[in-house]
Amino acid sequence: MPDRSKLAHALRQRTPLFGIFCCMPLPQVIELVAGAGFDFVVIDNEHTLINPETLENMLRAADASGIPALVRVPGSAAAEIARALDNGAQGVVIPRVRSRQEAASAVRLSRYAPDGDRGLAAGRAAAYGNTDLPALLARANQETLVVPMIEDREGVDAIDEITAVPGVDLIIEGAADLSQSLGVPWQPRHPSVRAALEQAQAAALARNVPYCAALRTPEDFDAWWQRGVRCFTLGDDRALFQRTLRGDLERTRAQCSALSTGSE
Image 1: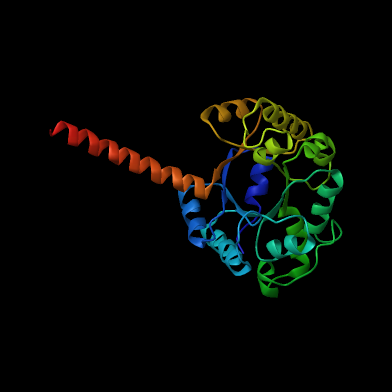
Image 2 (image 1 turned 90 degrees about the vertical axis):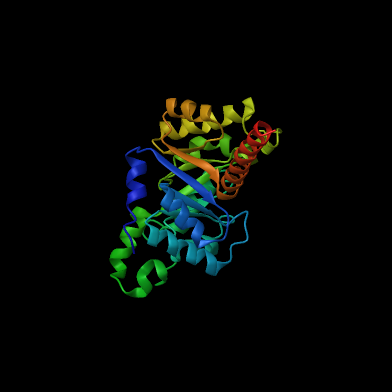
């Protein structure tokens, strides 16, 4: 298996990092994202219908392409976390974490004893047993990332306690669901949503826990950078694909229109 310390080390060193959510169930998308130069991917297994075999092949593509891959699991169940990690995810993104207890449970289920009680399995992440398994446990505990998403008012209210949980490696914002929780659905740049995101980020900064912000406008980057954020996501693959297609088509149609008008 490839070196899995790169992303964890970069987060600790506050190296600027840029990632993307991958929702299309295609290993080729992972290869394209890696080829474009992204620093990490988050494979979305919460809002998509990625079957287990495809997820494994997407993780295999990430390893082959040298890009760290996290999996957003559909909840915080032990089986979902174990399947993602046992098949090669470098970490798990836990949606809608609302309390210290939920964050602590995610850490416990993601790490082996003595740091947790993740079940032992000599699967793909363990090279199917063709490795020093006791040594693997300690290395996995150091390199596996546990990433709560803050997507609810309750999560913002409990952010000091969530970021205080040992083993929480990164906080990712979830402005869309948060906007709904705050009564302004699908307004992720609403002032109340922005204030809640800044509260979460400030708490993470105070605890020296990295924070990952979503970039929706060029101004977002400047604002978050000034606040000390160094980890960012640039949306999801479907939206970027659609915008690129539409932009290329609109530019070509504009050229066609200009040439057609000039020839008349």
